[in-house]
Image (cartoon, rainbow, N blue to C red):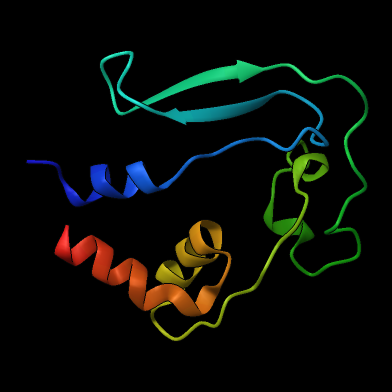
Length: 108
């Protein structure tokens, strides 16, 4: 029987945008290699995109070497469900889908 996490992993397919630059990781969901998720390194050329956090109060929350690779950030509503809201935003593109993420984890 698959765990809730394993079921959630099946919903997720991380792909890097061709516009992203720098070394990144791409997680491929599939069972062809014996595990539900395999990770491979991708090398991109060019300079990183402009800093979206430049001048932001959040810029000092990240190590300086990570800043060039951050394309976007969202401050989700902090109501005790902020972790679920962050996952919902990453998976479904809408932080208000947090209850759907919670149900996916509980029903799994």
